[in-house]
Image (tube, rainbow, N blue to C red; front, top):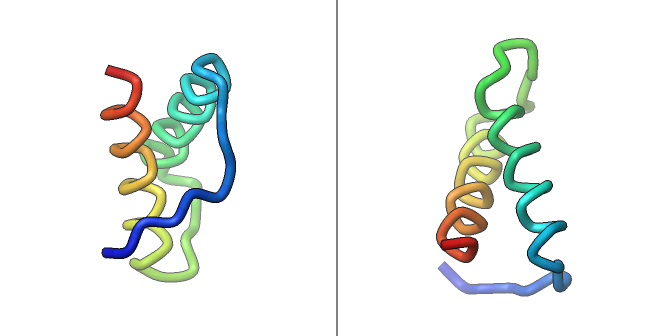
Length: 53
């Protein structure tokens, strides 16, 4: 997959975003338009987790 950097985050902002994405992934009340949206949220969360290590 092609990589695209949309914005830069401070470490604190990245941690906050990662925590938020994890909550989105775990909540059953979030309704995604399609499977691709759910996969993108999960992928972004995973990428942030890797960067924060």
